[in-house]
Length: 479
Image 1 (spheres, helix red, strand yellow):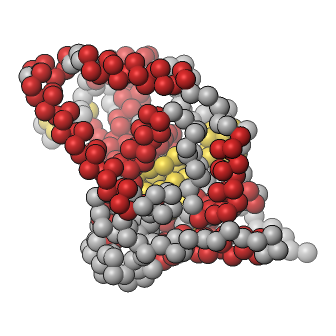
Image 2 (tube, helix red, strand yellow):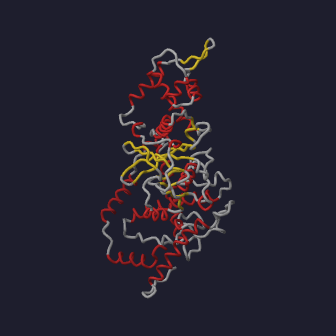
């Protein structure tokens, strides 16, 4: 236990205690993540709290613990008390299950009615809350002394902050959350397969999301169950504290490069992989968490990145991006494309695809995405090609049509047009000729869906593009 600091050594003691506590918090993750084969048990992992012997667990279910969240000493209790509370919770749950089995059948589980005993408990809790008063001065002094004595090495005292029943509910919820955390850490550090042993969660901006695939982040980050990203510069960090400190100092509020498109609150930034190498590498590492076939991570110099953002008073928040080679011999207009999970199914994917073809039209080229496409990418592209072709055929009045002419006007590769027409059942071979069937039912369905879209439907406006193709730009003259 921490002794009460004297007046003379109070500041030095405070600094020592804070540093030891923070070092302990970081050691929780750094002890074993350097080795590929993890055996995360009590022999190689200890509680980071100084003075704790790692015995007991806040839930009462385990003999040892390895995190502050599960440390009884940190929560101002003991291992025996946690064990006793766990036994009491188990008995209460067993009694509750028996009561439900005797009073209700399986068919009546959806229509449970409060018993008299339950109503009495609810009434008692309400009465207890009404009688609850503010914290007395002596208890305030006790809380203040506890905080000054232990600083961050102990959880603040909770007695007197709420009624006894509410405090009990909070403690039970805290124990359940601790059990979930214990399960996540144990399963994460017991993985041996590289695909399974990966970053599980990502926090960027105000969003937290589960990742889909592994990404080649540095070893000390790839072994963490969760990483934190700055939504503006895409720097990756280990803890929320580091992220909070970074955000207080980060001066970025939009991607680097040139803003080449703005329509209302949607912007597109062109980022050169050669000029902004670190940002583009971080963007590729982020994309690999959600793309299985992505192979480009660090060699970003030959590519241009087009980042879509949603703008507000706080800055330009990344929605997604696509990349393309500066000089593609096969006329690929997209090398990699991604919409972040929190913005999926909102029309942003089609906007990215439409924007890539708008750039191809501006360059007077016919474009096509680089293969292989991800499953979601293939679905998005087929949907886009379908809408473009049906809209084109609806306006087309001639009796003969040339695939090459359609390709020139839409900037879509002829092979993609043919495959889309075949998928729609609109391409037939009859008497030695290929025929395009103008199926009126498909066109009417397309027009009906288009009419139902809101007036503020997300779409790319070509008039808002301010861009010169890369191969037509003049190099800046050097003085």
